[in-house]
Length: 204
Image (cartoon, rainbow, N blue to C red):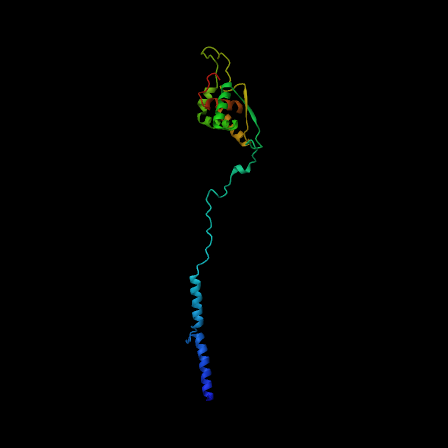
């Protein structure tokens, strides 16, 4: 049986309405298929775990580069800075023996031993100088002092060398001036004699 024009219109209208309702969900606020699709997308996004990022390793303080003055110096294979100039000093036989023994026992260089002993000597400066500087053999109230004052204890014929930096030598000169001794070489001999292990040699 043939459908009337009105029925066709009604059918078409229902079809259009059904299609529109399918996408709009039959509501006027635009929810429906699009809303559900958006919800599914959000749910899917929520259910998928975020990609794990590799943890950034913490840098320990020891691993961070630390500024060092040593890196500003060029060190030669023998452990000295090129600008260091070897300087000689003379000590007695006894001090030379004690110096060599201490150097071997501590695995230090002569320069390092000299600096170590000079550093120790500053704390006992007055008594060290008093012990080292020898006066006339005889002093009386009636006559001029008799006998020639001997050389400071610790000085002698054995020559050794140390290699200070220019700034180290400047410090050394200030210490020598403070002690009232005649030279850096004499001070080193006196300091080694008084501060090296074993008692200072009375006859040095």
